[in-house]
Length: 92
Image 1: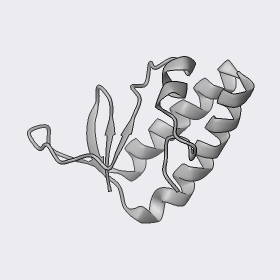
Image 2 (image 1 turned 90 degrees about the vertical axis):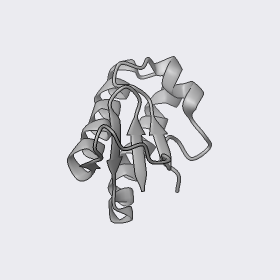
Image 3 (image 1 turned 120 degrees about the vertical axis):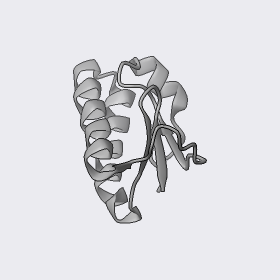
């Protein structure tokens, strides 16, 4: 799976890591629904950090179609809320 973090680039992420990311995504969704700004920021940063840690960065000159696009690290709670689907940011 190719994941793009807006403003940072793309990483290749093995499907085996989706369970870990989905757990963080579920927490993020609950914090967004509850309007918990500090919890949202903590979990959103943890989600992005997990993608960076688990993924393999693609070369800057590579442009692969992204399977998943995540908001930029400085995105607001409202900006992230606008990008959500019923499943959150991570499908599944």
